[in-house]
Image (cartoon, rainbow, N blue to C red; front, side, top):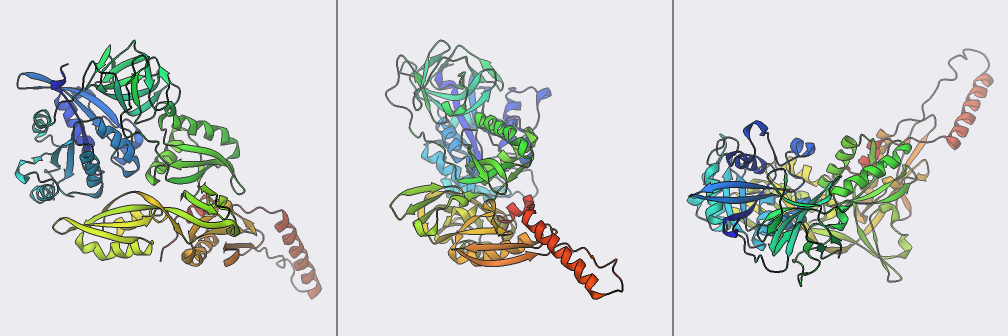
Length: 599
């Protein structure tokens, strides 16, 4: 197809602003998906995506649309909306020339809308704003159009107003895509450069890379080279998404399609890499490639020890599809054998946890998430640790650095004070503020990642009645006055309950944790001491009282020595039991580290 009839675009929006529904209506209107096969969220193929209403995996689809006597090819690249998948979004944006900016008529511009919009502007995309959900009684399209005008300088009266659910004005959106989004530039005769913006694993075809051909032509018979990993592959198949995988003989500059590589893991074919020809390679890869870096770490252990191999297999299979998941074997005194897993963020961790439980039917214990710290030792060596249990002894440490994030919160102005209070309590520092619209404020803060991953989002939503939205990105590593908070149950340190905390917070966090554990750990036949220690001293202690059996019940009347004899016998039995007894720690106890009250 001639390049001037191709339009490559994506849809960017905050979570739940109607992105997937708008994509559904477009597929329906262009006849890409027949009415009898139509269902909600066509492009969200995972059960979890449908349930949570969030796009987790990017996908692509080709639509044919007749306009003014010509047939146009519209390639929609559906991107994840969540902040954890920011890198995947940036790669998908690089594969497009334009973006539909979908804004909910009842909510207005929110934090992730802005974050993804700035990414799109950095990629020099043509922005086409669309106000969705105009059919709702609480919709305020004129007000929202004013917000978008203040943000982008596009006249409010020219902004499209649609209802994806009811199918209102969807044809006008398709017309605007053809009219306003530029066609791709690229030379079919130049050396091949094709950007990989996503991939999935197929058990028959190996890794299937989703590509956008920037320059040159790609044919089934070509031998391809991945420019970052230097691997050469002979494609099993090349094709386009319509919306299923349809094989074709060649892809030209401007086309969006796929290459079935036959490779065995996604690691060999990473998002952001560039395909070129092995015989006539391009001089340089496309810019912007990087390894996705895990930000949040947690231990995953099987509840039953014999499930260890099955858990390993489940993680390996998930890693085939998700190269950003990293895991290493680790051993815990309390939980035996398991894995230390790295995730892009808390939402990514939640998705992996649910997929292990559902798709592989495994019972797992997940320890409280932590972040990666940089520890500078007195001998000048710098080590990275992702588990609090691995923190070296205080006598060897010169300083501990923790990751800090730039946090953007968009909220109605009435919640200014309560958000200020929340961020200050969590060691955040105020940077600046902007007013994107009347009665709405954008607050910018610097905050440690360790404070963000512990119930921050829930707290923000409850304090602002659900009106505030947030986005964050990595800033730098900063030194902090940090110590290891250890928990000892029955004088034994429980490594899975250890946490790295700020020295000022150690005392009240230790007290709160001990109080919580006292309520959660079941009573034994002997007294169990629960202690919290930091900087080499115990800062809090509580006892779980022993279950008592009344051994004097059968002893009525008679000499006092009989009673003493029975009590002494019971005392000896308890002492012996304490030596061999084992304290069962329930799953809730490991999550208690997460839900410590901040006040």
